[in-house]
Image (cartoon, rainbow, N blue to C red; front, side):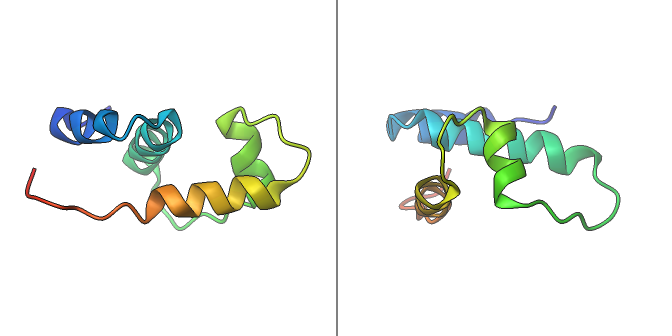
Length: 74
């Protein structure tokens, strides 16, 4: 799996296991997809191992972590 160690270091500075999980999962998933794939929030939550009864808090937290802005070049 082609993980960029510079990205992993930057995400580790955020002290967010979810951000690391998202990056790792997306990198792995995107490395073998050959066509567009739809994924429901419930399915994504289940794949991430989140044990939440509702997907709303999971969705909000995931979207928040995806919006992390790059402050300086890697």
